[in-house]
Structures are given as structure tokens and as C-alpha cells.
Image (tube, rainbow, N blue to C red):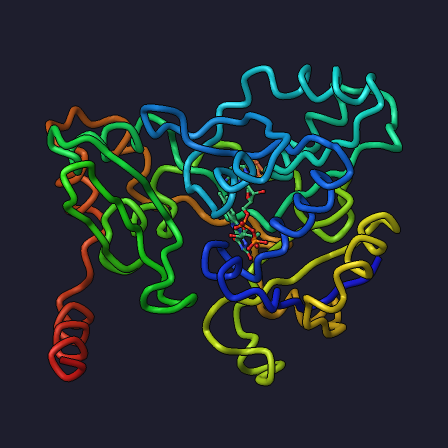
Length: 311
Ligand SMILES: Cc1cc2nc3c(=O)[nH]c(=O)nc-3n(C[C@H](O)[C@H](O)[C@H](O)COP(=O)(O)OP(=O)(O)OC[C@H]3O[C@@H](n4cnc5c(N)ncnc54)[C@H](O)[C@@H]3O)c2cc1C
Ligand code: SF4
């Protein structure tokens, strides 16, 4: 196992990725070898689902974290069909999806590369559907980015573009859905007792945000996104070697990951009002979440002051 901090030097790719833009490079390699990439994208209703792509245009739809449970559909059997044909396959997903894929396949395939990530958990698809319906208020959605970097990688925003040219963009501490996600109000029940944590996992590579990189490796920090990679397979090593000109890579320790990213080992605790939230009959999901996750007065005043001072 090798653990590294990585920045993709390609600024455009990094800007359009959640962290350091490494998924894109792995996908590019696989596509260049005539392979197929599986990942999570949006369907026509902006629900999240797994599908596959055999070109980079298709891969772009999988970029950026989507903070909703991805519907797996026929992805496992589709992947098996490509693997049996001898095609190279990159399958990316949550740690539990990679584990389920491996159980489904039963055999080891030398032509399969699996990529998971350090996983906070995935929100309920129902809550997302209700929220996005209310946010749209009848407008047609053009695109959604949960990790817009206009204000930087650390203070990311949810950005929704509508067909009528209107745009919604709110930071992680302002958007109500993201706040509820980060406060663990509506993750799937299994996420609170996740069995897929730790450094030892079935995936060939685990991707993550290198939160705190500014304190550990300040030379890598530019607030545009830095990744942590936990590499367990020589094929992934070789791919990264092939791209070494495009990457800035530094070795880091298990301990650094433990200290900067608690989700590597620990599941989050459910919000104390989770049961009430799911048990209640509400008219507006947005108002209901807002009521539960609203900042205590002291913090709300501090935030307002900070905004005013920043202009
Ligand atoms: C729900 C979720 C929770 C996460 N929690 C953490 C965390 O607690 N700590 C941390 O350090 N990193 C977390 N990550 C991972 C991180 O946000 C980046 O996705 C990862 O570092 C890869 O970044 P990248 O720039 O290389 O690639 P990107 O271009 O951002 O690639 C995104 C990858 O994630 C996959 N993906 C996106 N949404 C989903 C989804 N809903 N279900 C399954 N796969 C999906 C895509 O298929 C693609 O492979 C989480 C990601 C998701 C989706
Ligand atoms: S937290 Fe665990 S159970 Fe929840 S989506 Fe992530 S890997 Fe799966």
C-alpha cells in the first residue's frame, strides 16, 4: 500500500473535479486503452445513477461528487459483460458499491480496476428529489455541481444552472440540503454503521480530499483541490507513473490521513432529530430542514458580520 498527496497540474481538470482531479486521469488512461468507465452521473431528472462511458465526453458526466445515493441499476452485470469480453474496466463508486461489485463478480478479473473514496455517507434520494423540486420551482434544470469552486475548494458551493439562464449558488454553510447532509440528518441508515472503513479495502485505489493539506504540505496548497490516494495495486501505480509529468505527488503517512480525514475510520453520528425528520409529515422539505439545521444565534451573527466585513 502506498499513500500519496496529489495535484493534477491541469487546472481545467482540477477546477471541474471535486478534489485533485485524479479520477479523470484514471478514466483517460482506461479510455485510451479502449476500455469502459463506470461512474455516477445525473439522469434526465437530476437523480443520481450509475452508468458507463467509452469516451471522455461520457466520463465528464461522472466527474464531481454527487451527494445523493446513486442508483446502481444494471451496472454490475454490465461491467461483468465487458470484463468477460476482455475489455479493460474502471469501476468507481462508494466503498459499499465496490464491495458489492466484487461479491457479484465472484472471480478476480485482471482487466478490472476499482476506485472508491473515503465516504462520509450518501443522502436519501427522496429528500434530494423533494429539495431539488422546491428549489427549481418549475424552472428546467440545465446543470448541477455540488462542488463548485468559485469560492475555493474548501468553501465549495452547490451550483444549479437553469435553462432560463438563472443560477443558484450557495456555499456549503448556506445551502440547506448540503447543511443537512454535513449534519448527518438524512444519510442512508447503513452509513451510520458503515462496514467499509479503514485502510484495508477491496478497491485498487481509494480517493479522497486532502483536507488540511495547507498545514501538512503547504507547497501543494492553492485552494483548487488536492487529493489523497491510497494505492493498493501495481496497475494503478503504473498508470500514475505514466502521467508523472502531469502530477505533483508527495508521499504521506497513514497517520496523516487518520488525523486529517476521520471518515477513513469512523462513521458519523446521526443527527439527533433524524428520526423526527423522517417521521414528520411536512409540507416543505426546505423549510423543515432549515428549521432543524439552523445556526445558533451566536454563530449566525458571526457569519453575518464576516460577510459584511468581506463586502
Ligand atoms: C457521497 C460522497 C461522499 C464523500 N465523502 C468524502 C469524505 O468524507 N472525505 C473525503 O475525503 N472524500 C469524500 N468523497 C470523495 C471526494 O469528494 C472526491 O470524490 C474524491 O476525492 C475524488 O475526487 P477527484 O477530484 O479525483 O474526482 P472527481 O472528478 O470529483 O470524481 C468523482 C468520482 O466520484 C464518483 N461519484 C460521484 N458521486 C457519487 C455517488 N453519489 N456515488 C458513487 N460514486 C460517486 C464518480 O463516479 C467519480 O468517480 C466523497 C464523495 C462522495 C460522492
Ligand atoms: S458510508 Fe458506507 S454504507 Fe454509506 S455509502 Fe459510504 S460506503 Fe456505503
